Structure formats: C-alpha cells, structure tokens
Length: 59
Image (cartoon, rainbow, N blue to C red; front, side, top):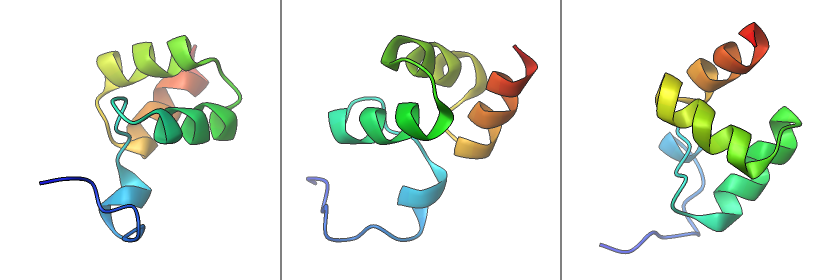
C-alpha cells in the first residue's frame, strides 16, 4: 500500500519514517539536527518521535 500523503494525522505525527525524504527533512529541521543524526537517532531509539527527541536531548 502506498503512503497517502493526504492523511497527515494520527501516526504521521508520532512516528518517523526515515524512508520518506520529506519526513526526514521535516523531523531533522524540527529537532535542529542533520539528516544523518536523525537516522542514527531513529536507529538507536526507535521510530516514535518522542523517543527520538528524548534520545537527542540526552546527547
């Protein structure tokens, strides 16, 4: 099933999909980090935005 970009509520707000460039751009800008740092954070903390944010703040 393809990603329906018209549906932006729910899980789109709480999960980070590092396979979608627009999401990586959005979240890396929001957290003030590079794309590479975001991908590393997701790999280490999981794809939930709150877990990634917590991980970034620890570093």
